[in-house]
Image (cartoon, rainbow, N blue to C red; front, side):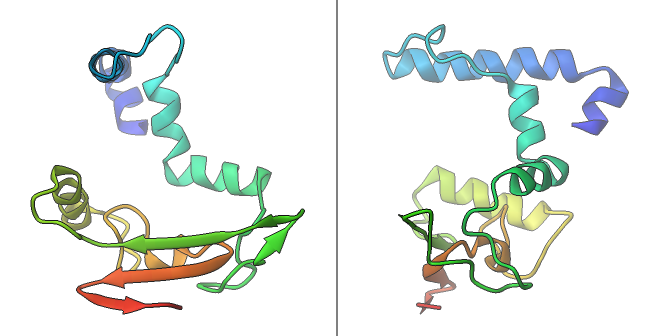
Length: 137
């Protein structure tokens, strides 16, 4: 989003993405006014900085060691996670995640296109599925 802010295209980007969101809401017969969204805020929340801010505020289930597991239960809440790579070659979403993996500037090893396996561990990892190999840890 920094690039969009620097080039002055953030307003246009916000309008385009918000319009796309409204089309999705319409296609699902939902009232887009009842589910407000902000593309720039969403972009920030999924950026490296935004994720760090979120993790600082909400530490439930986060690992205390690099690539480790977090608490399996906290505040009476059972915490589980799982991640996978491409699972269905006919799924457009899987193809998009694979494309993100190929262009990712911040690769942290094996990932799902956005999040590395180490960062996907939250609470008790239920399973990690990559390249047809299932790891239950």
